[in-house]
Image (cartoon, helix red, strand yellow):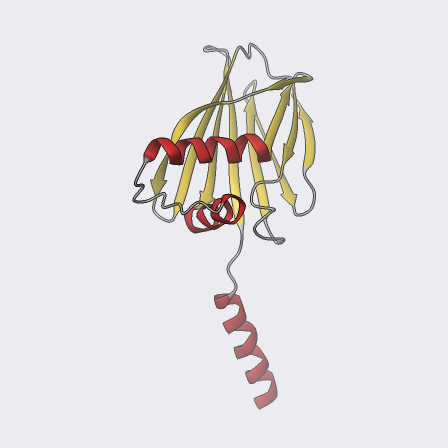
Amino acid sequence: MANIMVQWLIMASMAIVHPFFVSVIDINHNAKEAIAEVSIRIFTDDLEKTIQKNSNFNIDLVHPENKTIIDKKLNEYIKNHLQLKINNSPVSGNYLGYEIVKESVWIYLEVSGIKELNKLDVNCSLLYDFETSQINIFHVKSKGNEKSFKLDYPSKTFNMTF
């Protein structure tokens, strides 16, 4: 009985010590404006560590010394790790900015000229260069329908149709 209790305590402490690594990407097709609105939610400390690891650039998203440089680094990272094709055509998101909400950073992009979103192809490796247990969850809305997909490391690609 004592052995079971010790094992349970060890497992419980490991769960507390070892955090989970997840980001959430929302893509909403706004047919009226002919745009795809993209928002990406990532834990702030994970994103900071990833950018520092890849660029040797000390980054503080909460208290940035130079917001212009931070925006440039975030835009570069997102462009390198999230590629979209809408209706079989590669698209590039226009970086709008970011905001800090509690322990997360929300990054906003917009893809213009999207009259319809019939097919979406995704290639995503957000934070894969930081943590091999990273999970990226997608929620996509188009034509009044919402679909979700979960990418677990090392899987990078998926597609969906509406």
